[in-house]
Amino acid sequence: MDWLHTLMPIAGVPIFWPGLIILGFGVGIIGGFFGMGGAWMVTPGLNILGFPMAFAIGTDVAHMAGKSLISTMRHSKFGNVDYRLGFIMVFGTIGGFEVGAQMIMWLERIGQINIVVRWLYVALLTLIAWMVFTDVAKRKRKEREALATGQKLDALATGLEWHKRLHKINIPPMINFKVSGIRCSAWLPISISFLTGWLAGILGIGGGLVRMPALIYLLGIPTHIAVGTDLFEVAISGLYGAATYSYKGRVELFAALVMLCGAAVGAQIGTVATKYVKGYGIRIFFGLAVVGCELSIIMKLLSGIFPNVKQITDSAATVIVLGAVSAISLYILIAFLKGVREERAQRRSQKVSSAHAD
Amino acid sequence: MTKYFPRLLGLITVLLLLPTQLFAAGGADLPDLMVLVADTRKFKGWEAWWGNIYNEGHLAFALITTLIIPVAGVILGLLADVVMSRLGIDLKNRALAEH
Figure (cartoon, rainbow over the protein chains, first blue to last red):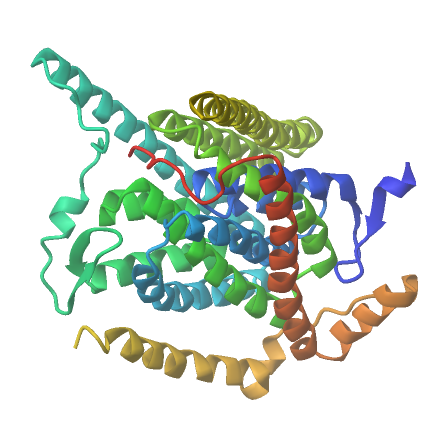
């Protein structure tokens, strides 16, 4: 089965190439569906497939730039991209990303990159999972309270509403974001994007994992605009990341292109699937994916702490990360196929009824 | 002020990042930098060529990578678009998703 492995020309490691296509396809679906790069699954995935951590991060960032560009093009046609907000956030993102990338080089020099990146991932994923499930729980409580008073909760209501306090910060210049429908200090999106950019640079993610919840909970913009604007940010930061990481010699272009072949199809399926799947169910599924990813990283950490069970924990990490990507991708793929079938049936019946009317 | 704010920020970002890039080109801390070399002895054809570009200097390597990634993304995206539209899906409109 040697033909299933190919030697990477730059990193010099043999890689199971179908794994790259599957990873690209699966994360393309998830990224397009949740409105993010999905690199938080790819970096550990590439590391598990055999890439050294610095190459896993660089290659991941490079492939993400191309994939997010595809999703942004699609979301832009849906009118879901707030370019004004996106351009302002780009400055914070780039500044933060550069600081993060420089820190990665420093961590690599002192030999602490694997342990720091993995622990930071665990902390971040715990925070995201807590945020998602707290939001879901609070919204359900609001629903129950509304039902008790005989009212129906607004479809746009959220559980967490931190943005209302943050919008009161009155540091000039104050800016109106018409597409998002908010007015706030320009420093708010800049600060958020700097922080998310720094995390993106140090973890090798597009920043969407933290920027998406931040756009919704801290800036208070509607979910569909957050999805499109976030992908626009991911595409820009990914491209900048591809440039800076390849200049530092940590990108395996061949692997990125193989992944992009799968991701191009996956990103389209994921983006279009949002037409058919809505609501808090998506967030719950997203929270579960975060927990799955976190478990796989904990397994990798355990293998470092307890070397005698390394084989078991490493295998468990691989099974969990590939299992999570496969299960969620399958769920979205089924939702997509079901939605397409219903839309086509609806169109056919419309045609038939209009033909009858004629 | 609001109108010129994004441009002002752009200028500040460029001014902040330019020195970093110049230092990265060889201005500072060179003894600490780790040098990675691709082992081209194992490859032939385009793989050896690509490895040599990497070994000769990372600037050309970075420029080609940064150019190929978005171009490949757009081409593959357009191809996927054609396939999707053939499935009979409305790719221009969708109902707003709830929060």
